[in-house]
Image (tube, rainbow, N blue to C red; front, side, top):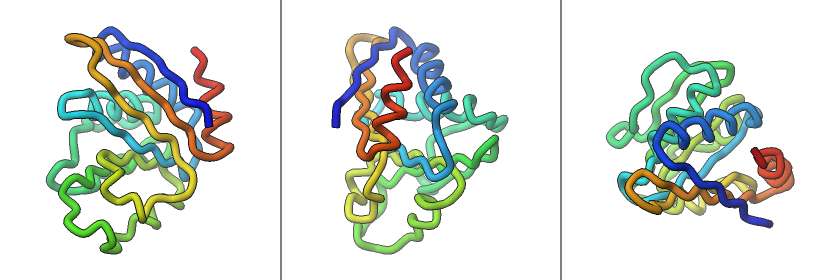
Length: 151
């Protein structure tokens, strides 16, 4: 699959990019969100939430593993950094194949449990507030979605 790269100059642009992405998502969308601490994963998820019509404040689920938000579609924001056993069944399938959008931070830690198709998004520091957003679609639906993002 072809990778796509976008650049943003500040947190607002990162959120706007994610908000636009939200308009292309579908029930059962799975987004793997990778990036160092402070790379903007929560900022990105806040933009997705806005695009999905979520009214609540979105923050990192660091200590709860999953936070659920209701909008046009449910948004399931997962932080699996503290999941001890990558093979432990925590019921992720119910979220991955449900009617909402899953955003999974540190998804590589539960790689064996991930669905076969997803959208991997990596956020990279490129300066003080500059970010490079790398998108790797895995599966035909995500490839089509990525091509639609040429905004």
